Length: 177
View 1 (cartoon, helix red, strand yellow):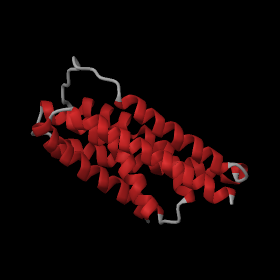
View 2 (spheres, helix red, strand yellow):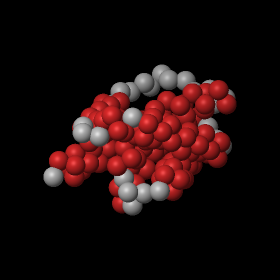
View 3 (cartoon, rainbow, N blue to C red):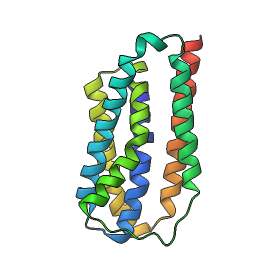
View 4 (cartoon, rainbow, N blue to C red):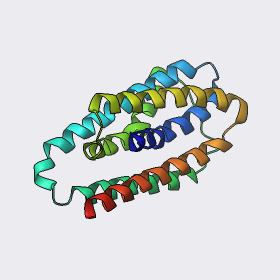
C-alpha cells in the first residue's frame, strides 16, 4: 500500500504543477481542473494495466526491467521538464484546454499503469487512490497557485520524478533477488 501511495503522489505531481499555474491565472477553476485531472489520472493507469496484463506471459522474464526503464524514464522526464520555463505562456481555460492538459499530464500514468501489475493491491482501489490523490492535489494546486505563483511547481515535479525513479529501482531490486 505504501508503494501505491508513493506512486499516486508521484503521478499527481504533473497535474499539481499545472494546477499551480492555472491558479496563477484563474483561481476559480479549482474544482473543474481537479475533476479533469483526477478522472484522467484514474483512466490512464487502467489502460496501461490492461495493455501490460495482456502481454504479461510474453514478458515475464524481463518485466521488471521494463518497469524500471519506464519509471526511470518518466522520473527523469519529470525532473528535466521541471527546469523548463515558459514565462510567456498564455492559458485559456476552456474545456478543450483542460481536456488536453489532463491528457498531457496523465501520459505518465498510462505508462505507470503497466507497473500496477507488480504492486500487490486491488486494481480498483489503486485507480481510485490515484484519481482521488490527483483530484485533491490539483484542487489544492489551483488554490496555492493563486497565492504563491509558479515557484512551487518545479519543486513538485522534481520530487515526483525522484519518487518514480525510486519505485522503479525498488521493483528491479525485488525481482532480481
